[in-house]
Length: 450
Ligand code: PHE
Image (cartoon, rainbow, N blue to C red; front, top):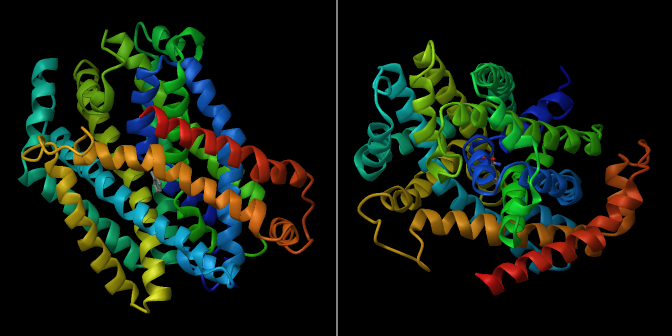
């Protein structure tokens, strides 16, 4: 093992797995299938992949450059790279706020996974009809005590890993958890495509019907791509600062984006054939995974075992992502506020839980409390995916494309001239022109049409 890098990850593969673990999450397994289902399947998938290639990878690379060049937390990174223009630090502060908001609603759904692990282990999911399963989901999410308890347990597990540190906690746990996740999802895929009638689901996912697309699906695809890749808030600035100076940033980003896209597509393959094979509805929305899949498990041989496996998979995916969200805040507190790692992780987790209470209760007692006609949970989800992540991404690309000297960008990508970066002119053209213009159009369209 290479221990030259005191600050961060011990190897390139460790960095890739940790960052891919941060990117692969509920966004891929819970959110991706239901937005694909609601937006007509394959044509949407194609658009999503195009956004990842054209905007996702360049924005990701830009964040990693900012992180590794500065070797600092989200706010410190901008202070180090733009010492004369303190306003850029505001971009870092915005990222911190977004981390708090995402974590507070994300931890609600992450907590649900724990409840479903318990339910599937003690057999309570089995032998129920679809109406009973739906009823079970809503009475659980509407009750206040259990969802809050599971939420705080999840936040506690995340804090424990983060307290252990970058190498021993984050890198080590994700290197064990990610291969396990991949294995579990492949088993689910095999089971799903071997069901009678599975072809319909495969067709839905891969045979494009462009007539189903509209302007809204365009924006949804972009929001989904950004949320899934964890870009636009600086999670990859923090993880980028842990990447060793000798690692190739371009191949690193390709691997992270590739792993994230692969898991999203595999989740689609695991879910849609099963949905169609059992004659269920692919457009049922955010409850798809929780309400539809238990029916599938119910009608399968060894269904209980698959249910346990699946919800453990979902919890693992969520955990490696909440770790990345908490680390963003913790590194800032360690470096800027001079707190210890333990104090930073505990205090931030408590604060996130306090905000998260509102998100959990928005399924129950606070259901009627609306902001712009949305519950607190829906408002936080929309605010981040639809506005704040694209705004963050726009600011990061402007910073790389227009503020940081071109020679510095080249220097960081080529590891001080050691690597050949033949793709540089394309990358630079995208971050300087294409990405900012495209993102500006998206943000303005959102503001006008919402
Ligand atoms: N990418 C994560 C997921 O797919 C969510 C996330 C978004 C995590 C932004 C960190 C930052 O679940």
